[in-house]
Image: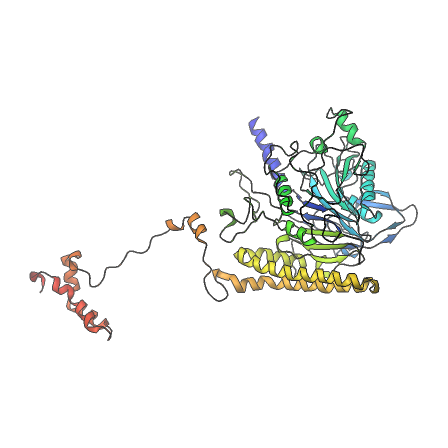
Length: 605
């Protein structure tokens, strides 16, 4: 029995390690932001074969009675192949188009939008960010033996196509999931989902999981107060639902009925959505909680507890909180690049970070050494990250998009009226390096920087700061000019900036090699190692210095008679004198005969 349990535990750990799509999402109410925008974000912390392409889906019109195809979302590259969603997915030679697993009625008109793994921002400025969560119920898609038709991937895209406001998006996603069934992404921990959904006026936290029958869904949404921020990181965060407050809470009737049927809730009592329907943190304790704590810390909310027993039942972190200062777009960039620097969990410190302060902890393969790495917000396996600056001024909402790990990416802007993707951002095959790919440019920077991380990342951050400054300046300029600009002009302006970013980062790995290769600076001075690291790895216990050679003029008492006799031979003395230089010759020559002077008289033959 114990061996079977060990197998189950190992299998769960394997799935946690290899199938996780462990994302972090942030939300900022409009009165908590510096410019009055609603802000929301998402890092798609995929593992393995993630699809990092940014794609533009054009608006479309349909005749009455049309059907919208629904596809199984495998969540790796390529995520879709076909002609249904724009030129981004046009089949390459030899590629087989994706096959629908079902259909739903189509609407007469669908809005244009940007998507990566999920819908991101549509032409009306609606924005979405996603994080996979654990749930107490799970099911499969209709094409995989289950009865559910819709995943969060499809639901976010449909919301982009059909809605203009956050509230209507919440209601549409919930209604469709109840009607057609909801399934998680298919991983051990991914049976449930959470979204941040925002428009220029408000932003909602949305949670969803399958119902016990596998044919419907359980969902709830809570409005983020206008002067508050929120953080969700692979775990539900909505706690007690106020069923008497329809402005700030939306939910399915199944929230009540399922909990009551299971004996988890009684009418008249409060209902904690997370305690009831979450399955807690996965992978390890603090996997979600540390990121929530860390993001709030970066928001300036530093009084929250660091420890707890069980995050599912211990409501140690608020659903939302008011930051002490107003939040800027680039504050969200910084949070997604955060490795807990400046706290006791700083992952740039300690032996695991190596001599160059590398905070990334790659997946381990040991089956004999038990343990876990700290889970940071910034992480090496991010496929894409984005921030949506949801607003109704200037050009409208702005998408800030960065491929690969946030630490070494550069967020580029695109506005809601834009109608295209800069070419380097539509190329991202994770198994085929390409210099035409922004994803690969940033991936190369990230990996080559590790030869001297603490040094190279100063160069990365300087380049990021300069180019992101330029991006903000470009947005401000186009906000002023937007009444005179058409979509083509916007596309061209943003594409020029994106290409500058792409080319700048494409050149950076070569500069790292020139500057830091083989343990030397470019000026050929050695970099060396920090003293603390040398002590930690036992440098002092390495091989000792070579034995000290005796002084040619040392006292003869330390030499044997045989050695003295050998050193006094005519050939040795003659060679010794011959080797003396002109400078100091007399002293050297005298030294050559010193051994002879030390010999007992009977040996001087």
